Length: 517
Ligand code: TNX
Image (cartoon, rainbow, N blue to C red; front, side, top):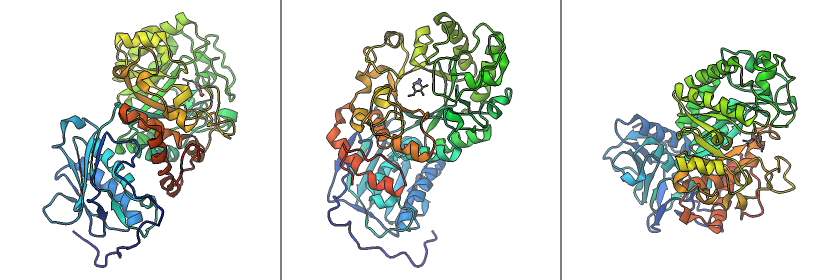
């Protein structure tokens, strides 16, 4: 144990007058059960150590990640050590021996005068617990330089686990490419709100953004200079980039879901390779935002060779269980052709060891029950979806008029679209994923996802402005119990996140519906 000889002075300064004391319940998403004990506060100090389960590499990894989050603002050494009997003030991170009810992602967090203990069955649960701990510390913990404050954590205990297994977000790399750095920055933000899936929309009419070795021009031409909306979003992920993104996400317990959209939304591929068109003629590249005009050639064997190459190469570099094949807005494909196409392509996803995801249109073809439907409609009925659910298919809920982060907040929002309406924070929060579509109840809902389409977005600031504060609303719908749903509580907790976002340089939209601190 190598503690520095001169420890940084413990600052005595209390929170500035007027700042309300944090409570154990001031967390987004709201934990399942909290039992505050106001007599018990733990204060992080220069002697605090982080202890992790002995011989557990995953627990040590979570410990190291927590130390990295806490060191800049505290200036404390926070060494990460195996569990030991030495009576030092400590944060203990323990895998195993936790309540079975916590499942794969839950955790138990106890704060007493002597320290903090987080217990979980898995490293994912432990990681989730550290994100809660982070929010229980003063907002200044997010600062990149040393702060003078008392690092008090409110006492009591939390028992927490998610309502839904799938809590997702989506980035659209096709309309405007987002760099590896931008994707990683978004992953960092997502992980703070216990989001565990990031869906990457990798191909569309305006661009192809993932390297495929057997069809090399997809990226150099289809993702090259002049691609993207207005020609202003060129770029693509090499396989090495993609692996770096999936690994970075995995360290934060986020699984990447890659999407190749088909049989429509394919102009970037078809304008690059003439042979992918029924008439053998390559259409011009498109940089406008129209949808529904492109279609792969359904009766041509080359189409299926192409799709199989893409699925095989993408599955090879995708550690997660899912591969999304789009299937939305195929208005240039007849219903009959659409069915022919999907019935050939869905088995290819299984052939390469993945479980298929598709936008809700895919349910028209009565796919196998392991195919997940992503609902993006604005209504409350969908016969194909309800029938699929009756057969056993699961659904991820992304209703466009609630969960689409690219919709404007109101008529003055400078970015975004409005085809599904304006979505203020309260609209994004006030709905129940298990009561949204007739026939799609709690058991059929795998979870929720907040897509962010990039027609109008370019920079990370643009992404942040549309995602914050609505992303935390969707995250809470995915994690917290239906019984805890409460707008007044949510808006207060949301307002208290703002000092954290300012310190993290998150360019959020200061909605008038929220009492911002
Ligand atoms: C509809 S949602 C689309 C996308 C657009 C989005 C814009 C869906 C499955 N398709 O192609 O980018 O609207 O909000």
